[in-house]
Image: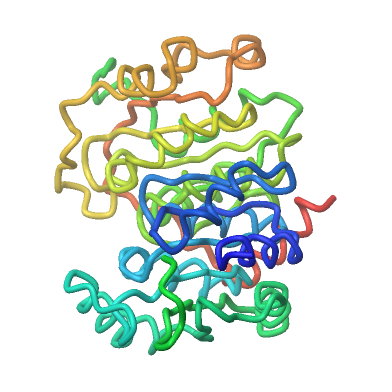
Length: 167
Length: 191
């Protein structure tokens, strides 16, 4: 099973009513599976800030909702994350691919990681996992944590050194 | 944009009229930050109102998520022209999802209400035409042209353009915390 398939299975196990997202190379397979699924609604938004809003709308109705974006995308949406998700205590799960780490050294991604560490990591609760070997129950656990904490949570997936290069 | 400043409704009256279009079916009303939330509360306070304090323009996205989560309930996003410009792409996303229970009411007074004077960049645009180009001609309306009978048969998602008078008056403070808004809304949606 690929990492993308495992992430989809983890999402399914959590049972979100909807997932809102924008593509990243590491998320493309999972997005395709979510979009084809009859067990959730995938909303393909035009901007990452919209994703936070759409997920917050579902959470306001008491439904589980997740967001899937790249780290640069969450940077675009930090205002919404702070003033809606945090301010209204909404337990949404934001799945982020943290590009630009040591094992993922694309030149155009380096500043994204720097900005993620400087802003998102200081504002939000972030749990990090290697994309190649994350536990299957990570998304159900993230929802349980967010609902207990009454706040949103960021699950950051990162490439790791020594892992097979598949994405 | 039709009407002159002297005969255009206030923001509060336009919101009240939009809510009344639903007749006996009170919509879940998602109002944008600032004057839309304040005037919605003043015009028609209800536990089914969601007063948003997020970034300007996010109400349409929140309303979309709500519409998907509650497909058997009507959802109305209430947003100003300045805010709509800030989250314009949400109209494209709504048009893609095409929820049959969502309407977007754009209140256009050509200025950022809280400044009472600073013009919005969309001041020369015809919002109904923009709505028609994105949602379809049959799905875009002017509030003045609507009655409850017409609205009951209107295709959704719907776009409603409402030219309103500019005003220097501010709505009363909400007087509700985000936690209180969330708790009351969650209970009302579950009922």
